[in-house]
Amino acid sequence: IAKKEFHCEQCGKVFFIHSSLKVHLKTHGEKSFHCSECDKYFSTKGNLVAHKRIHTGERPYKCPHCEKSFNHGSHLKTHVRLHTNERPYQCSECGKTFTDSSCLRSHQKIHSDEKLFQCKHCDKRFRQRSNRNCHERIHTGEKPYLCSYCGKSFSDPRSFVFHKRVHTGEKPYHCSVCGKSFSKFDTLQNHKRIHTGERPFKCSQCDKTFNHGSHLKTHVRVHTNERPYQCSECGKTFTDSSCLKSHQKIHSDEKPFQCKHCDKRFRHKSFLICHERNHTGEKPYLCSYCGKSFASPVHFGLHQRVHTGEKPYHCSVCGKSFSKVDTLQKHKRIHTGERPKRHQI
Image 1 (cartoon, rainbow, N blue to C red):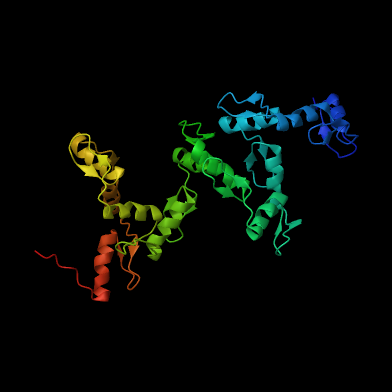
Image 2: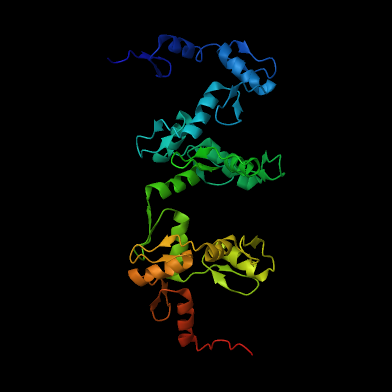
């Protein structure tokens, strides 16, 4: 049975309960409920009561899943969906889902070419006023969002919220499969691909696919030989910043990771874990081609190339390919005439 619809003649909004329409109609009428604190007027008593909590700091709506509380029931309802992963509002254009209707309405503007909001300082135009406001702060240098923990300030409220989670440790986005928590929704979406096996980022140079865009970006440098991260100590170059950071530890005497079974210490936790497998005999990396197992993920990766024939390291001079970067470096000496350094006895 179809529900009876009640339409607002002023704005066209639809209601399925007549009393809800009556409450809504007051928003078009006289605003007779007055806030004595700031002189604002409201069309309903409920809106005034909710508004007053801004002045009193009262936050009576508490989340049952975490410590957060809210001054409005609808804000709590939207927040709880972060824990349940419920996203009931779907875009009819692209299928993307959202936790609340305002986010959906905001998103739908990207499917329109209309950009109503123009920057006062340049010719840029924006679909949303909030995006225009953030952009204008590039010109003014204004950073109104101040972190009370470290004093850092931000021009963008979204970046400010993400930053605060560094201090609070808040991770509101939970994986429904393994229970792992994340501070950003995008990070949760990337993580979920571990469980689904989805690898939507495909290399245009070879058949490799990745579950994360940044992993593809780093991988492509294997084909282009681009190594933009350079060690300031020895000049060695790397395809990504994490490899550079890891390498830089060899220039330090600090070895904070100690083996539980002997006195050996390591600069990297990953080296410690691999070393401890010498004591335990554990070899968790199993080759699906021949059944051989490995203690080290590096050795496992190199071994698999024996079966796949993959040679991802290419010489930019002659085009010859190699399965190991070390072999490529040795090969390049044929073209440069460089002789390997002799070790003095």
